[in-house]
Length: 509
Image 1 (cartoon, one colour):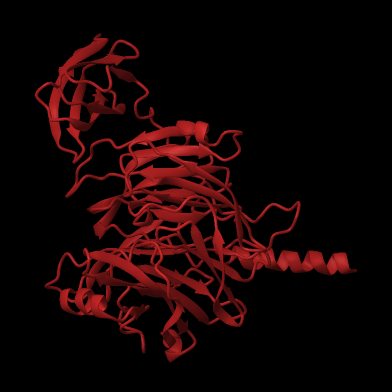
Image 2: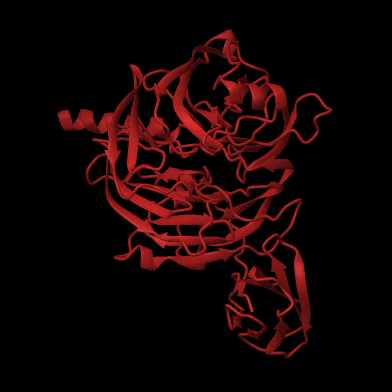
């Protein structure tokens, strides 16, 4: 009888978990048309397959500190720009003004008006366990330190509570700017994972320039500090800024990417304890990037500014399994469309933004596949408006209780209609010597069936050298002696539409 009741309880948990569509609405945009009322924004609705992209005018912009939340059925509830909390009618919710109070709020939100800049992943919204109307918004405040040198410090983590049963479903903020933690933490990187009981939440954030991680628990009594866990070496100053942190969909792994490279750990969801620390250096590391996991939690992706790498968590040597699956192709919109933060979406694809004003997102279409079969499509999704460095910040809301021997419920629903995979970037040619200080050879894997354009791009996406190879050619030569030292991208585009991209380093002479 007990086993029967346990099975029923588990089934109810799985069914309830499957309906948790809190991450089905994504909002992105910034005030590029300040003369008009409201702010232009793109809305991505994952209740449709493929995702439906539309445009709206919102009350707040979506800059560094923004995020949103939908209800269990995938209907938008509210969002924040780090300055205020906005309801689904796109105006400030009752008592939702002036979060993250202080001098920086006054400057950024009231005087300049472009949104709060506490770091990517500095706002996070979680439903309160046991409630169908209360939500906790966790948000991080920053201060400007003037002496001895100017610095931006995340001095505290706060929370505010929203009751969506108030005001006929438009909501009311019932608690605001409650101090949760008063020690400096890293910029952004605020994330969460379900407790082993499948109901409560662990919220985790690394301390600034420290090996320590602060754990907070949200249960049906509210949010509170739990404990400090220490794991691995301290992050450097540059490594404690920017980047991204995420848990794997099954809750087993915790990863941080920053200028220090990839920090990878395992998590005990019952105790909230980290273990099995690994530091994986990323070549030519740049703090402007992110980290995400495949839906099956077997692969970890690092989007490192101009390169996307895949690591196999099932391999005996995870670091050695690192594979480059994409290299920035030199595309230029208003700015270069390099790789920024990454986020696993409800359609089982990983979406990647860029840290600049552009109208596009990159997509990893098949992130469960190893190697280039994962299919990275650059600037794959066109948006109606510019967006400025922002992706929402979502945990896996559908993770259930930890039951030994049982696989966790799927975190997303695979879209059946996947696009045809084109030839992968860099598969059709090689270039050498690399690095170079002068002449390079671009050699094709087979003689060209038609003409191909060979173009060298700067890191900013500007073409700096171009040459055409004729039908039947097996190589071309490029003279780079006149170019400044630095990193470039060589793109070969054939008449049949295939494109290959490889990174080239030019050294000083």
